[in-house]
Amino acid sequence: MNRPGSFFLVGPMGAGKSTIGRQLARALQLEFVDSDREIELRTGVDIPLIFELEGESGFRRRERRVIEITTARPGIVLATGGGAVLDPDNRKWLAGRGKVIYLHTTVAQQLERTAHDRNRPLLQTDDPRRKLEELMTTRDPLYREIADWVIETDSCRARDVVQQIVQQLQQDP
Image (tube, rainbow, N blue to C red; front, side, top):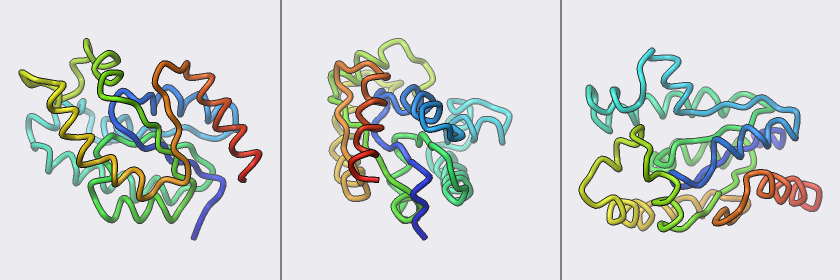
């Protein structure tokens, strides 16, 4: 069942999903939920520690459960983790339960936005650019597969992206 009152933000790390999501929820007078933050609240630990203790597969299991539960809630703006689209059930729930907005950004912009962020376990590598390129190659088609809209966020302020989404909603509710 499609819930037009819910909006799900997908895209790579550094695209602005959390920042834009908070502002979009405020503009639409909806509740904001960040799937990564929800996982941290449920476990009592941060994402890097989950990765350290359970690996990426353990984190993805937790993420899947949070996506299943939160997408079933009406009237929310949900910012997903960059890899949420890897799970076919997550894609099904996101696409079937609300409007999916793909916040697209380039690898160069991702590098700039995540350069000093130590809470990104997948970027704790010798070559973050190469890792981001690999992730984009795998994930971009999945983001596009479920997206109702693709919004470019490179060199954009969050409030401008929110305004663009709100305008799009007025044209295509």
